Length: 512
Ligand code: NAI
Ligand code: MG
Image 1 (spheres, rainbow, N blue to C red):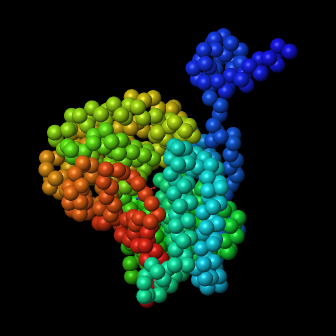
Image 2 (cartoon, rainbow, N blue to C red):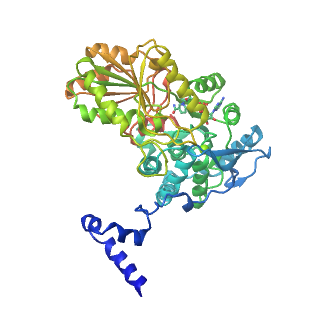
């Protein structure tokens, strides 16, 4: 009887306001909750998802084992535990996938009216929304990014890309007025590990909308959500072979690049591999688009709203552990506000939460892989050796897994490696400038040209600076905002071709 009364009391108290709740004496609270006063487990907790121990290749609408019989592990970089093993596709598997894509292209997809293709894309978009929570968890455990990013950015943006391109599928003739767009054929697509599901959506959706079929190769550390997407394709009853997915590392990618049955290649990743691909494709009829690295400049003028700008700078570099090709990794501060900005940055990085990526309060998750962590450490050390001063958050880092505390470097000069090489980690290089012309000259002084940011209260200054910056995307008084309608891509060593928007469609059509 006594126990029953207590249970009732507990239920009632849940409905009380926090103040009344706090007024319940501690001894009584312990009676109900034990010694812990804790939150209920979040639905993202690990026991609420299941990952198959093995993943096969996806081709011709079915999951098939690799001809080599080989598999490789995919780990959770936050715990170093193996999550599953993925099939290792060799050249023969890639060949079979290309063949399946060709068959689907010739027999079904290119003949299908755009109106019908669009229906499949809408269906895929809705299924992504339906399975959003599961996809977000998989993305987070496989890649290390915080759940609040995979849940609030990656997955909704992936769905948005399918919705957007679903809309184009039957309207292509309006995209190219007075001309006739036709598909290219089989597209080979190679994607990186920083936005695995989003990059898959970003590449697959426009290809399919324009009538092409696809062989996709995800990055070796993050293939899980692509394989889940393959199940979504089955559920959406996408015709067999329209999308095929081969898993593996660089050799699998190279086999795809060199396959003669590919009509178009789209690659996102390092400039080094991008150059190799460009060389391999030169002299062949294959079309190519490359989205490579970046070393974006964020230019902060004295007249900017400083606190808002600091938040933008923080998101620009620490979002997704800095694993972002358009990360604002160089900050140029106008001299008059330099000391204020440094003080604010120092305070702000101290409040960023680093740790368990599945915790919805985490700001900075795990670095994607051990080699990437080593690369970040090596570059930061080079900055210190060359005379820059390192400021790091004093947060404690988990013992297991790959972690790097949010950091920034001051006293950086253009000659330092940290000012010109892509770090791809939560590390900002801070420099100063005096005049707008100097800011533009220094921002443009890089082999890359993917993105940039400008912070000022003066609209005319924004327009003047934006037009002088050699970068594919320039954000003004904001940073890292994306939309499927907006073309994305770079200049110089950041690659060529655009993805998203009208311009992105052109990369998947032959227009006559
Ligand atoms: P990566 O360029 O080696 O990997 C990207 C993709 O290319 C992966 O799917 C990989 O398996 C594939 N690949 C590797 N070698 C290939 C080859 N020879 N032919 C065809 N495909 C190949 O990038 P990695 O090594 O993972 O990262 C190295 C650096 O690249 C990072 O530290 C970062 O600076 C930059 N990076 C830039 C990205 C971007 O979004 N622009 C994304 C990932 C990395
Ligand atoms: Mg992984």
